[in-house]
Each structure stands twice: as C-alpha cells, then as structure tokens.
Image (cartoon, rainbow, N blue to C red; front, top):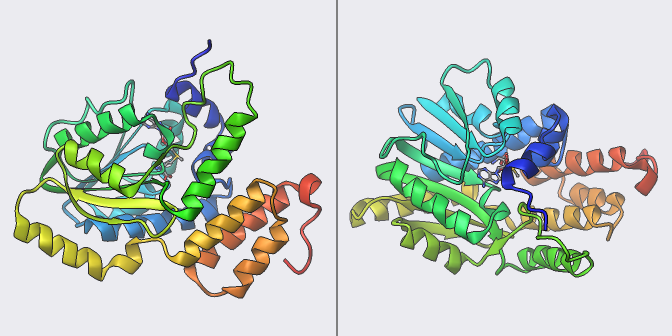
Length: 309
Ligand SMILES: C[S@@+](CC[C@H](N)C(=O)[O-])C[C@H]1O[C@@H](n2cnc3c(N)ncnc32)[C@H](O)[C@@H]1O
C-alpha cells in the first residue's frame, strides 16, 4: 500500500508558484491572495494582540499569505512548513522583508525553535489537514516554544456547525466512492468539535481563553498562563474585538455557496447573485472575485462568464 507523506503531498501541490497560491488560497491571482492575506492577518493580529516587539510564529505558513502582511507590524515573523516548495514560494514573496525567517520542517515538530522564545503563534487551515496525533504533537511543541504569558490562535474545521458537518459529508461521500485500496489522502480535510479541540489544547498545557464556533470553523485563542486576572483581561479584550476575529454568519453562508459551486451543486451565477445581494460587505469583497475566478477558469464546465457577472 503506497503511503504519501505530508511533505510529498504538499510539495506536489506547490510544484509551481501559481499551484502553490491555489493550494493555500484557491486562487492563483496574487491580488486576491494579498487581500485574503490582509483579511486573515487582521483576524490574527486582533486575536493575539500583536505588538511591535513581538516574536511571532506561524505553523504551516504556506506561501506566507498571512506572514507577508503581518511581518511589518511585529519585531520578527517566523514561518515554518512541511513543504520545501511552499517555503521557497514564501521566501520569494517575503524577499523584501528583513524581519522574516523561514524553515522547512522535516518532521511534525518545531525542533529548530528554542524553548520559550515565541510571544505569539498561530496556525490557519493547517491542523484541519492532519491526523489528530500530529495535531496534538504540534500543540505540545507550541506549548514548549511559546513564552509564559504568550498566546496561540488556531483555526480548524468545526464539525459541530451545520455547514462544517456538510463539508465533512463531502469527504465521507468522496471516500465512499473511492477505490479504498490505498490509504486515505494524508492532507484530506479533518474536523473537530469545539469541545474536542479545547480538550487537546488544555491537555497540551494551554489555558483556553475563548473559542468562536458560530461558523464552519473553530477559532480558538489560548495562552500559557495561570494568572486568572490576566486571562480575564484577555477574555474582555477578545470580546471587545470579536467582530474582527470571528467569522460572521454571512461569511459562513458565502462559504457554503462557494462550496456548492466547487462541488458542482450550483452554477457560479447563483453564488455571484448571492454576493450581489450583500454588496459592499468585506465578505463580498473576498468571495465575489474568487467565485468569478473559478468561473473564468472553467468555461468548459460553466460556459463563458456572462456580462451580468
Ligand atoms: C491550506 S495551506 C494554509 C497555508 C497558510 N496557513 C495560509 O493560511 O495561507 C496548508 C499548509 O499547511 C502545510 N502543512 C500541511 N501539513 C503540515 C504538517 N504536517 N506540518 C507542517 N505544515 C504542514 C502545507 O504545506 C501548506 O502550506
């Protein structure tokens, strides 16, 4: 039975610069990747209260979609990734920035990062692509490298949300129609309930400050601290900033429509019309160009883009 490792899989997805952009963002258009990166960087910055003196780590940085946007607002940004091809693309995209360090990982650990050296760490759309054993090993590693009083922000798929459940069902159906004679794709989408994800974090030595789960994603902020007053202060800060951190209901709805386009359930025209009913929102600014790009890239499936779109 063939086993394809995380490294082989993600290196093959990131074989060319445009494939690498598609693998992290779904779009090969640099301007769309930039604006999506700015959106996520704002969420991360707000969740972790990133300060000018902070040393920040991203686990699974891909092409530095987020790091490129975040590096100017912190002292040092380090990106690590299992794929050497992704790290090469990240190096190209951050070549103009002098406070960036990148490492290609050989295993699921952070051995090149010293103990207690990181103020803030985050991981977006990475733990949803690995086995639970590896997810937990990385949480233990984050616990080792993050300083006392430091924080982490992690996002993964939310099995307990109706759209998260629906997304998982696509995986289930896909598997039911597969040959089943080989091991499942190591990078397939994997899902946690919010309670389950919080349990992993606590067992790895973190105090969970707040999780947002009213969307297809669990977004969890945790810290290394036993200082109850400080933890409560962080919880109040996060509550105040929650609209900048948590995905909105509209974001989840637009995601659902986009997913329906990708899986051939609806025509992109329907998703564009949905976006246009919500014109002027940040969510529309992100999803509309993305859906339009999908349509433009697949005329054989959906026909040429119509003038009205
Ligand atoms: C969907 S991309 C997200 C990239 C980036 N976090 C972002 O949001 O733009 C997933 C990334 O996780 C990396 N990755 C997957 N499995 C990994 C593992 N076991 N250890 C470290 N990185 C991994 C992939 O190489 C890829 O760059």
